Image (cartoon, rainbow, N blue to C red; front, side, top):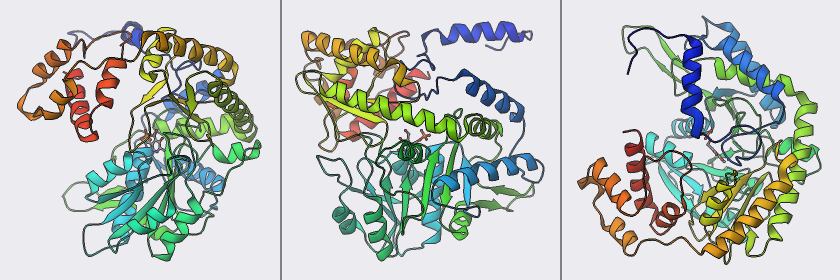
Length: 474
Ligand SMILES: Cc1ncc(COP(=O)(O)O)c(C=O)c1O
């Protein structure tokens, strides 16, 4: 694999272009998940140059590279200023939502010692990063239901789930699946009354909702100014439009942030002081985020929020008017999810992809039907009519094609299969035998895969997904 002789940068970039030929496009608004596009190339350019400028700076040692400390203080300060904090609000710049959540959970665990295994109360619509944090940090998750019509967590269910070993209660602003905001004030108050910390996952909404509010949207209080909220996460690589690797977690008091930190002098090498999970890390993402905030400025974010709000409203109304489709809940941010009544949404997603648009499938869970998810960004407004047209045409095609057929007996077979007893090659063969080529390049037809997964319980889905990952990385 390693070439015998070094190669030129031009040569390498040509190879990268080749490798990327089957990638979804990251610009232009036709991919309605994973990527966040301002539609302003000059902003991306400023971020890329700043990223590159900070690329080699290692934030491992803050005394060696004070530029990174200064930048982080400015970025954290900007987030605190928007989210109900002040200049002294403690925060940490992290690599993403998952790491911010991981640190909030560690802070809760280490600042609230309990007799038994620490627990956290997590709505079923909260991001799996909380399950991951629990898995890594040894906590137990107490899942709580959401209202079946509004998809917001039910405060009484949270109250009932709190036990003496509960260290943290979680709410989302908004939760990703249906883009609705949990009743933050009610839940934070009841957590505070029981002496329990409350984290607001505003990974999606933290840098969006304040601008949407200024653009005229109704946004309930959700930030650090709400009594009882003790930490909040806000991803800058989502609606901050920064390059990936940028999030901030804020804490209501410095002792909590200290509980998120880690230091070790238990070896004969350099002293280790880590604010984040990563130790050595590039300041590139920090530079990229710092530059993006400045390149857009307040007027830039407000203008993007106006466009985002207008696009979200048009999209939600337009989808509701397409026969056989229904929007789930009332989108309160810029995330729209819709289910199908006589239309298989997984087939619809494949039809849309054939037409050049990516809509994100979401499996049924906790009584919530399978649906498709759209993240509206600054660039969406320009193409919202084209998007609605594609959804309508794809829905019609999906209705005509009928639902994806799960091969007879496959779900039962998979559920009963001891996956540990087969190797990756056998797993890949099993998938191929039902027409699924796990290593296929190009545009995969995912409807059958999604239909199979949808027919399985969550535990089996997880085991299969891990196998899938293991196969594709070979
Ligand atoms: C509400 C919410 N929280 C957390 C995350 C995790 O963020 P990341 O993918 O940056 O780790 C996401 C990602 O979509 C999210 O939607």
